[in-house]
Image (cartoon, rainbow, N blue to C red; front, side, top):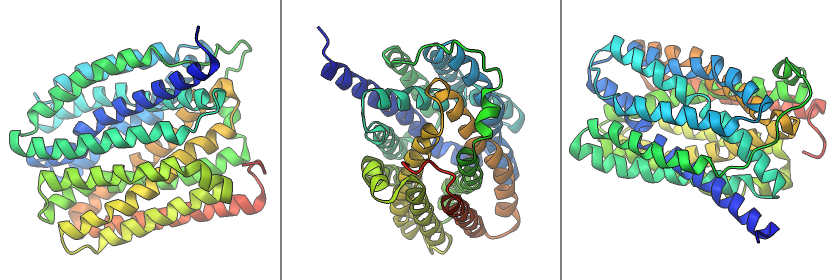
Length: 389
């Protein structure tokens, strides 16, 4: 007989294992993708264009997939379909060597990857609420998986090259599909709500989060796209690139673990402002780092800031949203944070990278995070968030 305590423990393990597997998969190839593309001979503008495809799919596909998945309680099945598509595309990604074939395959890869995070976050945040679990404690395993994969990947890909990277990533996706079958999900939505996502946008607290997330998405899009390439320019090897992303992800762990405790002390909106502050300090340090080794040190601040930012933002969105539309709300968040914002910021970053000194990317990104913090502070002062949050 399965007791309530056992159910709670199983829910904790299943959520943690999904995040470990998914972000471990992303850590195998994502930190090195733009370095790989640069080594193939693509310039900053071409890399910037390719970097807009995932945000475009976050904008167009993630909300469109999340709404019916919520309505008909098909989140897990949809998640599995996306993971299968992602695995197959990764297995063949090493084949194209020129821009236009890479553009086509990147579009397909992005099509399958974009809905995964909002669907999983929608399922697992509600799972955490039902079983009174610390969401950050589950999500931190994703950062651990990303860190381990990035560090090990940096060591291995430096020795064997990048081609095996895509094959390994595709194969590792397969057991993750099995893990997905063990996730609990909310029942189907019975009542008709054909425009649920537009209703979410009418909530003033949700709008404040989305405006701030748009600015934060510009920060993340610019920096993540060109951190590895800039590190390479500063003399950093594939190992240094892997260490940068790995160390950053490792320092996300304490931020995620204690995010709820910090939020209880300061409130989630002010905790989010603290996260923006850490991200600003990290970027200003990277902007003026004289070499790859000093640049590497600011991975610590980046990890602490991103860990606190991500968990707090996801939980804050969840608290403004009816449970039956959890995946829809996360889909809207992802459309703004990882869709609209990087769609604008990534090409801008590519242009700055080609036309000016690359460190200006990090300066401009810091300004975006500063304005995001101001938006949340204004919202707090106007009382648009639930007082309990």
